[in-house]
Amino acid sequence: MRLLIAIPVIALAVGGCERKSQSSCVANLRMIDGAKATLAADQKLTNGAVVTKEQLLPYLREWPACPKGGQYSIGKITESPKCSYPAHTHYEEPGD
Image (cartoon, rainbow, N blue to C red; front, side, top):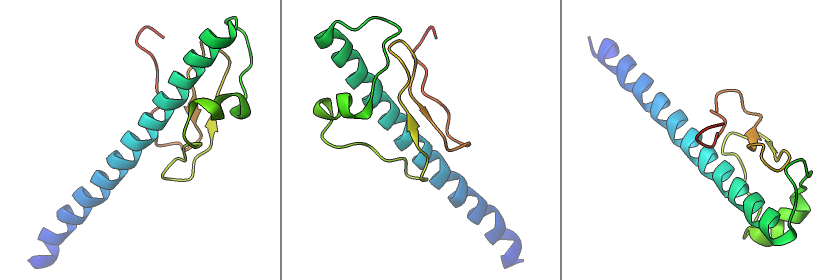
């Protein structure tokens, strides 16, 4: 009887951890996107401009890390950054 109660509790805890890491990852993607927007405004970059990590570092305290070890792809100006970890939802600006 106790085993049957423990299984759903464990499943809820694991699901909660995944949602927390996903939320943290999305927050990191938003920070990267904000740094891209600031860089684009400061440097008057056009929509197709390629952006590098080195260009964004001055706009961030440090380079963010995905809590599950995914790698962030920055993308061009107007493209949303993405995480390589499969279970993480990619951050998309409204209207993308």
